[in-house]
Length: 358
Image: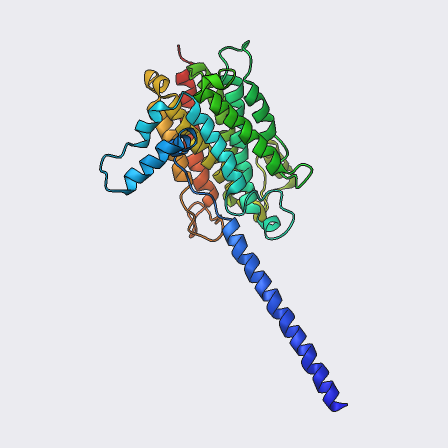
């Protein structure tokens, strides 16, 4: 009996040890995947992506010349001279959507299993980028690709825009990724018709001041909303514990809201995603609206917006979003982000006024 009990005890310990090892291994794998999937995508070169989609052969020749011994490799700016007006803008929207779907970990918002379901920071980032993608696509369909308010809309853009408005958290039947892929395909068909007028109905892109003014109006509202929410997101704007219920209600009526501590990072990462997407869209606007921006002397205003959005995407040095007081020991990430977005919004207001002048 003693021997059999020892054997049983050894087997039970062995089973427990194996289960412990498997559990720890699984947790380690999930931790590594979470760190990899939770990374924010890097910025991309809008001209490089446009040339790659429009003329892969020219892009390959440029890459080979740049990496070889030839000293006179043409720049992306020189190669982009052959791109039709509006191609860079549409290509940028297409690549933003493609990045959402194919970054590390893929599209995570609709994940139903770990580690994706636990990654709230990157899902907030995805939503911020998605909102800017939707606004950019709507502007292309309703303004940039139409000559007048009574003119006919582009057939491919009429297909592309609704697909990007599909619910962002659908896991199946249909999955969100499948709908966004259809939007990308429709955008690419529009780009093909821009590049080749004989491929079907001729695609149009009108880089006019009134079109850019209408898009800037939307950007102003988005940036203003993010700046306000980031300011409310900081602990310095939350209600003091000594306030009465009536004082708290009055503050709430004026728009101040107390943000739970565990949700402080959500608005911050949503703003990071929105800044990332808008930064690339503005670079495309600077390229395709180059002549009108120079004519209106608005190029510097766009450069200010781009610089502030670049600063808002400075790498984070802390493993968590800090929420220190204004003059405390630790930084306040929400207020720093709000400052950059507010400055970009101020430049957007200037751009709107410049574009609205005769």
